[in-house]
Amino acid sequence: MSTDIQSILNKLGINASNAAYSTGSNWGVELNANTLESFSPVDGKLIASAKVASAADYDAVVHKAQEAFTAWRTVPAPKRGEIVRQFGDALRENKDALGTLVSYEMGKSLQEGFGEVQEMIDICDFAVGLSRQLYGLTMHSERPSHRMYEQWHPLGIVGIISAFNFPVAVWSWNTALALVCGNVCIWKPSEKTPLTAIACQHIIAKVFKDNDIAEGVCNLVLGDREVGELMTNDGRIPLISATGSTRMGKAVGAAVGARLGKSLLELGGNNAIIISEHADLDMSLIGAVFGAVGTAGQRCTSTRRLIIHESVYDAFTAKLVKAYGQLRIGDPLDQNNHVGPLIDTDAVAAYLDSIAKCKEEGGNFVVEGGVLSGDAYISGCYVKPCIAEVQNDFKIVQHETFAPILYLIKYKTLDEAIALQNAVPQGLSSAIMTLNLREAEQFLSAKGSDCGIANVNIGTSGAEIGGAFGGEKETGGGRESGSDAWRAYMRRQTNTINYSNTLPLAQGIKFDL
Image (cartoon, rainbow, N blue to C red; front, side, top):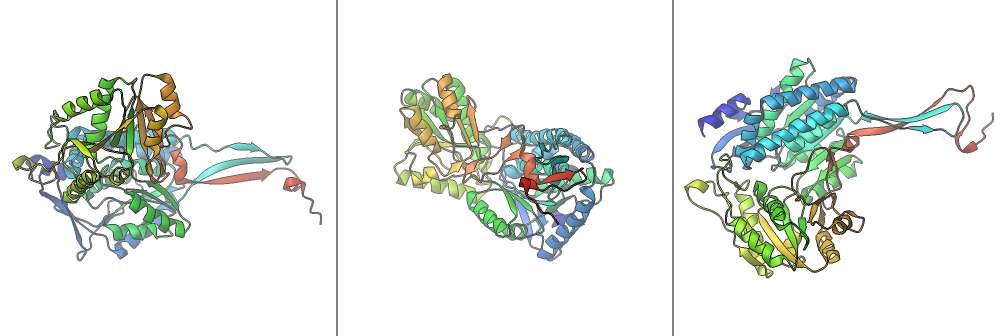
């Protein structure tokens, strides 16, 4: 471990061995607990370890959160927003350290690590304004001297299960909104990136302590699938927000649904860019390459498929091949590199398996893949971004592989391209590259993209926090971040006030005594 990384760990309050859970400044240690070991995919070194929360630890956290909710929900929403504003300022102070740790523990480029922390800052800013805009509607009553309106109340405990690829940003999307809405939070981060979660908990716990807010508003539990199952089956947690694979989301949705709880699911993507005959090919190249290789293809919004018009197919493919030949793969902390490692060797095995299956189905690789070796790639997690010519109905193309594998598909008409774009189980992000206004509008129309995100002349990756983020079909249907996504964290209540001296009934019903 380099001196710089060690100093960053020290700054963020991370020890060689860390506790299993936190309800604020209180960190619980279970001496006999199992241990999570966080190895960096950058160099394969052990960064630090953390305890796994037991069932008893988890129950203690939930109990503390329940207690905290009774007080937190009574704090005026603008005051809650002030706490979130301070959290945003604390993130600004720790942006370099936290962003570097994100890069080192997860493997994304340093600029992407800084960008992820900036997303956290941005959602805090958004939530501060939202804290004064939790609006309800007023309605006219059919009964005289009656007033009807609706208001929104917090749900209680929001359980947050996050994935490794955005180890801190997605938690902040949920937490910032949940907090201003009056909820308390319990966070189970990915077992592959526990240290960035511990760092975030230290940062936000200090903000609450400085404001004399009781412990239990923001909580952290570390563990694997068993801890997640405790959360999803727990009737004390009215909302579970889970980010991960479609397989995981189906299990979460079934468990939460069985107890009639609420779930907010952000699951897999199989995102395509349509490259029209009317596209600016040079601009399209930037969007396609970054979308495919950014974060080593481990974004839920990563570009998996390029659907290219037959008239520009050969020219654009040649541009892609040339661009891939210029990619620099290596240590993501070196800002000269474009592509870092996959998260672990299991991800490498999935990448190799997908390449093999693609070849079995008849895929033609115009840029070959493979695992990189040598001292610069000692972790065994560095792979070559690759490109294959395929048919959209290949089984492997219908499947999401979290790796830098890009599939090329040829089309003749826009209707055909849109049909290909939609003909996958997932429905997260989509894009068309075109300078033709009619094509753009058709892509965005009701008969166009069936995804939750549809872009024109930008790629599939890189959503801003101002818009609601999420997708349809096997992507889960959840919406996080901007727009009116805050409503998922609240319960709607309709109120009617009778200020007359009689009691008329609705629908003109008579009930005389």
